[in-house]
Image (tube, rainbow, N blue to C red):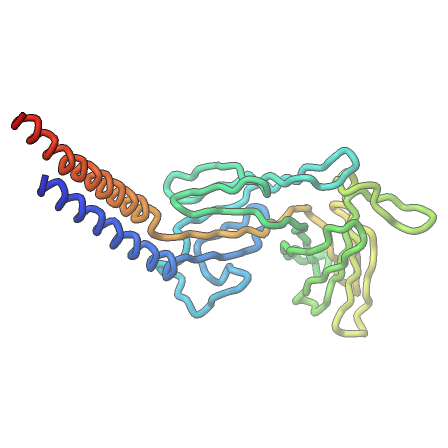
Length: 278
């Protein structure tokens, strides 16, 4: 009886101690990063990939989430009237044994205690820039916030020649008497309205409505739409100490259960003694 009660108190005390350690670990080692990744672009645990880039942390910081992944395909799903109702992501967890998983904006996934969530989605077109007809084109993927059909305009920089390209997106383009518009949000006939303004005013600007493989000229240069991709805004979070929490709860449960059993033995002994005397 004494051994049971002593062991129970030890287990309960150990459970409380482990719980306190777990709380300290969770407060001190919980990390959450948000990053924008285009289709095929990997997250490889570099802190500078975070949109709130904690550049003061080294790349091998032990508090970075222990997972590397790449969204292979981001697939928006559209309702009957063309509105986006959900988005699915075909995700590949990178490593020695790559694993393909399915993530959506309605269902997170957890891999090795790391939770991955999809928060938002946008357009990431690939462009080819050719300074002149005899040079090889330079390709670049840009993340644009232009999801509203024709309503939102975003821009990106062109380094050579120095210029700014302004872009609007029409997922289901149609031209009408009141100007260009989009029949729906579904990308049935995707067209980009691209306006290129060089830094040098002597270099001519260019403007055009571009389907895939369409090009706009500015000065002696050409900007071509090669491919339409999507980008996703992902949240990656990891909280250490989950196993320690389970151990602490198990120890406390066993300790309390042992204490109750010891109390019952104590109450049952006088009754047994009275029964022997009578």
